Length: 120
Image 1 (cartoon, one colour):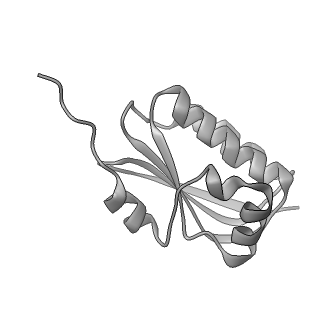
Image 2: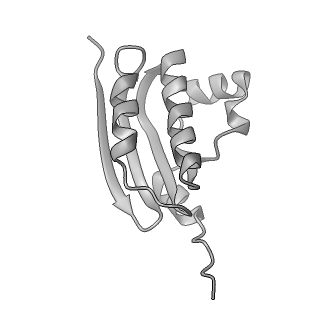
């Protein structure tokens, strides 16, 4: 049985989803099922912290794309944080490094977020 732990927290920039363990066929449904419950508003940013990911297969990549689609559907942004070296290479090979902005830490991703301008 594959183990994946998902913790979420809320920041001013939006929700942060911290993933630990293996993100694969057996566990990716945890991420997908959590997405609709996240409080994510237009102009915010969903940060997915991958620091604790030890393995990710194509199903895991698909779950990350589902998270991106969820964020875009509500006109929010998405950023990845602390992408492990083994995933950076995979992301580069399949072109996901062009789809997901990445930051060294979740805090750096939060700091890079720019709040939407308020309209008069």
